[in-house]
Image (tube, rainbow, N blue to C red; front, side):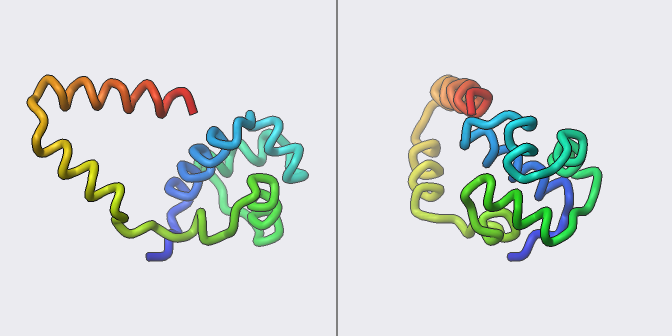
Length: 106
């Protein structure tokens, strides 16, 4: 499914930037954008030109598909869901806490 919501695109850019270990300033420099322009894009506050979008993809070493499409459930999603079904409430709470800490570290 194609994503056209600026907030969703901005959220995906945030995750991909964190995975790449870059700050907004570093990414904006690599993409030849002002820091302010990139920050607004990542917050989903503005639209961007195709050239800008492609520069961001190049700076992140990703394809436009990585941002503009939603992934269908893959086997890992199914495996996680199945494992969680067998967990106690306490185990689910612990798993959620661990996931939250992990995602914040990206």
